[in-house]
Length: 308
Ligand code: BDR
Ligand code: CA
Image 1 (cartoon, rainbow, N blue to C red):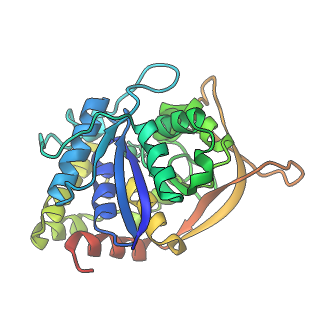
Image 2: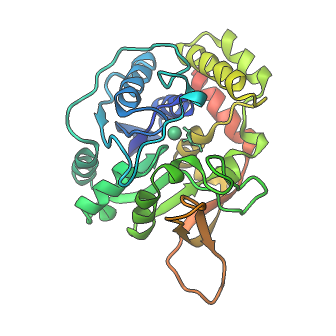
């Protein structure tokens, strides 16, 4: 039996790929997918999540809608990367979105199962609301894996939404600060590893997805092709699947423990500030500082092809 897991997403192209990886990984018992506003508005991130689960043949996994906007300030969506509908303009539908709220369901499911894993691949608004409303949630979350932040631990660890800030933390910096201070056992998978070229799908990898034939491969092919053409990057960056992969197989990553604060004002707003002064004692989070990229990619592609 896999680890009881909640996946919190702002689906989004790479979130869709993260859902597929989670849906096909027996190491995880996917209890629910919760949606948050981020790459596109909440209605779309929730609908896209349900549609992806439907394509994956996982209508058994409920989708719960969460926050419509960051805790403070306006939502800044990224249709220019993900398409108007958030999923490469494919106009997908299917599946169902429940009515109960994400934060409440996180708590309810965590208590019901006693110990769960939470993977977040969007802004941290839902998790911040959950942990603020139900502080004892931290006792039921064994590990929290997040895609987010840029920590300067590798040459790829600089910003994408601003020169220094990564999109998910930049979208809702207050939520990230709440999560980092909450006592959750957080493992951060940031741009330091997700921008490592060894983790990206090449054009050949993307073409190979076309011939594999499974519905998951076909979806992955279309959204990845859209992404590389739209962004003009020769690699499909698998930011969000990497956070799921950490939950599936943590040994693919190297981690360093650091105190991390979030810049909340000025031009650096949303930047993750890593405390490296040894004389400052601060409770840390685990920050990914290395990844076995080829092995990760192999795992990702095998699971989509249904090889194991
Ligand atoms: C993150 O930002 C979003 O656009 C992606 O879905 C990913 O979660 C990468 O910075
Ligand atoms: Ca995302």
